[in-house]
Length: 265
Image 1 (cartoon, rainbow, N blue to C red):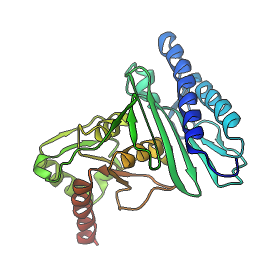
Image 2: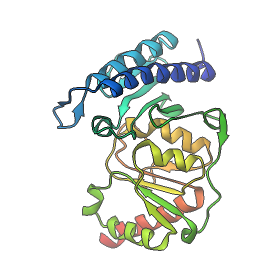
Image 3: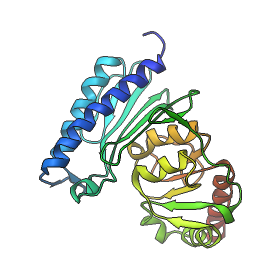
Image 4: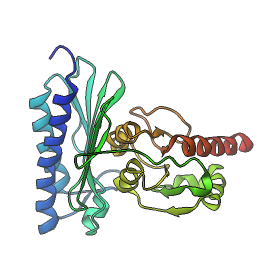
C-alpha cells in the first residue's frame, strides 16, 4: 500500500486483539507462573504468547510497519513512518491476582501521530476501537464523551498517581477531588472506556508509559474528549503521564495543575 489504508489497518488491529484474547483467556482459566523483569514488574507466558500472536497478525497485514511491543521491544522497519504500539497484557498485576481489570492495547502511529487504537478487555467483556476521523466505537455502537462543563458536576477517576504525591500538583489534585461531584479509582483501561462512553469526566495518572494509553488516547479523542499528559503536551513515545477528559473539564483541570507548578517555582 502506497498510502495508509486506515480501515484495513483497523481491521488488522481488531483481529490481532481477538487472537490475543484467546491466549489471555486460556491462561486466565489455567493460571500462570509469574516472573519478574529487570524493573521488578511481573511478566507471564500469557504476556509473551499474546504479543507473538499480535505481531504475527500485524506483520502480515502491514509489513511496512515497525512494531514496538511491551515484551519484545522495538523491531526494525517502518520505512513509511508507521509504528504499531502493542501492550499485549496491560494490567499483568491484575491478571495474576485474578482481577479482570486487564486488557490488550494496540495502536498505530503514523509519522508521529496516533491514528488508530483498539482496547480489548476479554474477561471484563468490553472492546473499544477508533480511528482518525471515524469516531469511537464500543462493541459496534458509536460513543461520545459527556457534555459536562462544571467541576461540581464532574466525576474524576485516578489511576497510578504514586509519583504525584511528591509533586506540587498533589494539592491541586486534592482541590479537584474536593470540588468535583464524585471521585473514583477505576484504573487501567476501565476509566478511559468510561470516559469515552460518557460515564465519567476526567482521568489522571502520573506513572505509566505510552504503550498503556496510546490506543485509549485515540478512542477518547475520537469520542470528543481531550487527551494530553499532565503538562498539557501531546503524547509521544516518551509520555509518562495522562490527563484525559471532556473538553471543558480537561481545560479546568490543566489550568489548576499548571498553576500549582507555577506557585511551587
